[in-house]
Length: 385
Image (cartoon, rainbow, N blue to C red; front, top):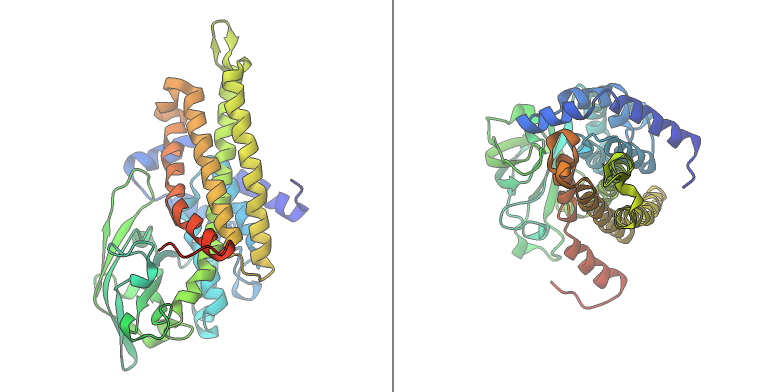
């Protein structure tokens, strides 16, 4: 696939940075379930996490296709971009719908690394991906909102200064349209942790610093509202499309890592007097995963192009995320099979990346919901849920 020189240079620069964080760094973080702060700081210092922030606020002013290249290359180098990817896709919502005052107050600090925007509070224990059924409620009281409720799967909340929070501001039974009544807030967590906000870690099969967050009469200024009250759901849809494209790019990077890892091992591993890569039973699964990855890669870049041109990238973003996550998971399974017993050994990094890759056929949206979306909104079939 042809790329312009700017994107090719971004790839080289990201790879050079990632070379400073080899497998042992990630294995140690994984064992300790520790946040890779040094890696995130290095990305920030290099300007990669400010890629989407306009020049006037201290960022690089790049488009989503460049952000996708950054996230893909991080994964292809064997690193874990999940520690930082939220800053990319949450940024789009703030840039598109935030006030000028909010941008002036927060964007320069995010660009410099003084502030981290890593937490996105949407999912809840009782609603999951049924966002319109969320129960967290923000009640307006004078110049403040008082928030009560709970979020789950809010990754990196312990390592973030700011949170984009979706809450209901009008009871569901009182809205004319079911998509109304939800509002989006930019919460300064430095002021509310321990003062209405409680964060509890959730231990999972991969090291994603995942948490659940509780709100008990948490007070935030009315100026924290992003855009208009009651319009938050439509605001996050744009951010969700960006999220799915960036996650898809990460999946492509993972697939490339698995394919390269398996190919190298198949060339070097000798059994019965010959490299195992000589056998078609080993060759064909690797080659099939490569073909699957390349097809998904084209869809990811097409989705980013549609998004950058300002079009409705809903279908493209969902297709890209589904195809890329499936390609990544197929490559992960193939890589373990190629390595045999060594695929389960920590020192090869395959088992760690295998666990990380499994997430993306489920999150941030499951494959079944993507298929339901395509069936209804693209093919015109009756709504299934």
